[in-house]
Structure formats: C-alpha cells, structure tokens
Image 1 (cartoon, helix red, strand yellow):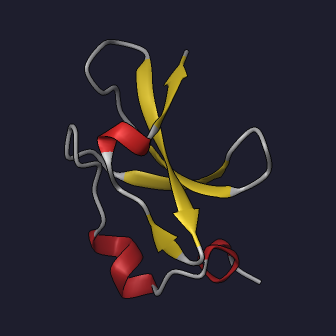
Image 2 (cartoon, rainbow, N blue to C red):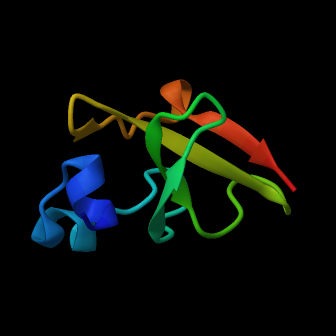
Image 3 (cartoon, rainbow, N blue to C red):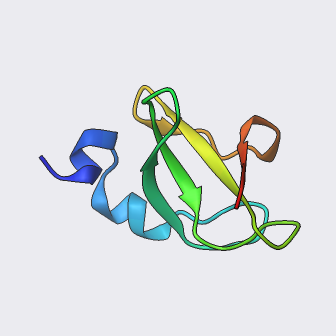
Length: 72
C-alpha cells in the first residue's frame, strides 16, 4: 500500500495541495499520536517552524488554526 493510499488521498489531489500559510509543498507524514497528516516541507512564519495538517476521514484539514506547529 502506498502512502497516498494509506492517507486516502487521490494522487491528482495530493499533487495540487499546498500549505495555506506559506504555499509550500506538503509531504506525507504521521503525527506523534500515529495519525496521518500532511506537513509543510518548508518553514512557515519563522525559521525552523513548520505546520502539520491532520487528515480526518481521508480529508486534509488545511486550516492554519487546526495545524500542529512543528519546531526544529
């Protein structure tokens, strides 16, 4: 099973999604609690700070207020 299949996202949709804060590329990842998420591949707001967006029932929640801040 590919990562896209595990996250439940269609490949065409996955290719066009971008971070709503910095417009950076989103990469497949897993949150600390084991849930799938999309993480911004570049810094948002400050150097070394990225955002992780949850995927709920196969739908990415691309809201800055709902994103997890990732430092480092």
